[in-house]
Each structure stands twice: as structure tokens, then as C-alpha cells.
Length: 279
Image 1: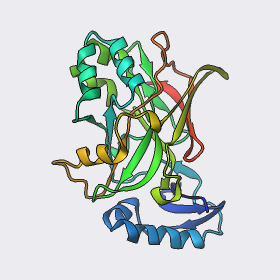
Image 2 (image 1 turned 180 degrees about the horizontal axis):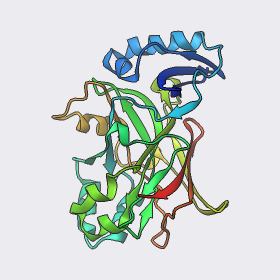
Image 3 (image 1 turned 180 degrees about the vertical axis):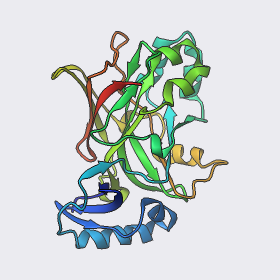
């Protein structure tokens, strides 16, 4: 049975719903509530809804698959990401150290209200001349740091700002519409435990101008390791989303433009589609 968890809006009301084999069943609670209880209890709630998922989609608008959760991100977890950071800066040894060191690079990416969902616009900064999407697998972690599920993420980044100085990373990574998640959450127990392939396409006036693929098999770090580091000295009572880094980095001559359409896809997790606007 295919199972996914969706955040939907009808008028002024929002709700969570389970989709199972094409049918829908609304949930009474929130994602924060599911991420507060033990994993097995959350699983029982979702599986009970999946068995009753025979209705229509209980909402017209698709929202980002989070409610009270912060979004954090890991950097330089793929060799291609390390090389991309070295391309854009004069600080290559710094990224070699992060890639090889036991402690990963973890940074705050977005507050929940700044995140956009499937079909909504992502942004590029008006004060940046070199901007790229970063296709990533997002871990949805419960309050105990366990992997509850997976979603797709787009960690929009200004390579010109970060390349100028690594201390500018917050400005390169954290701004309005810099983070997209979706289209849904696939529970951890409902997905093949093997590596997750991810594809990235950028369309410009309907024409493909960039395409690339990667797999989480190429990561230098495991999901559980990244989650464990994030929860050191940090608590997340409502759970958290952790983006796990990108293995698809467009070449140095490529930059995103307003009007582009970015597609991030995975057979297991769906397709996240976002047009691009200037912020």
C-alpha cells in the first residue's frame, strides 16, 4: 500500500490527511501532534487512517508538509556539493575539512511560515547574481530525533553571496521563499529502506536548461548520523525537518532566472514543482 501524509487548505481551515492507494482520509490532529508521541503510536494513527482512505481529497490547496516545525539543513554531505562550494569561493580547504570531519555542517534554513509548498514560487535575491536550486531529501524527525518520514526539499541558494565570504552563508540561504518542501511526507516505514534517487530539472520558457540526478547512496554521511548531530544540545518539541544536502549542483555558468520552473522528483517521494520569482 502506498501511503503519504498531506497538508491541505479549504477556505480558512487547514487539515492533515492521509492518502492511501488513491483514496483519502482526513486526520483530526496535526503533524506536531504526531511528532510528539512515540513513533509506533504515530504509525498506528496513520495506518488506521490509511485503512479508511476511501474518500475524496479533503482540501483544494496543497500546503507545505509542516506546521510548527523549523527547517534545518546539512551542507557538504556529497562530494559534488564540496566541489561546488570550492568552485564559488577561495576557501577550498575549509570545505575539504567539513566534508572529511566527524562534525557535519548544520545550519538553520527556515521558520515554518517562510516555507513554500508544491506549486508556489521560490525566490532568488535581487542582490545576488548567481543563484541555484538544491534538490534534497528532507528528513521529518519527531521530538525524539527518530525518522518519522521523508519529503523533497529545495534549498535555494545564492552562490555569489556565499562565495564572497563563508560568513555570509545565512544571507545566502535564509530569506523569504528560499525553502520549498513537498509535495507530501512519505512515512519512513512505507518506503524502501535503500538509497533514494533524486532528479532536478530547470525549465525556461518550456525548454529544459538543466537536468541532473543523484542518489542518497552518494552521501558521505548517514541519515541517522545527521539527525543525531542536530539533536545535540537542541530540542525540537514539535519535531523538525532536516534537509540532508545536495548531490546535484549546476555548473558554474548556470544561474536561475525569474520565470524558470524548478522540478525536483523522486519515484518514492513524488515531484516538487516551483516557479521562480525575484525577492
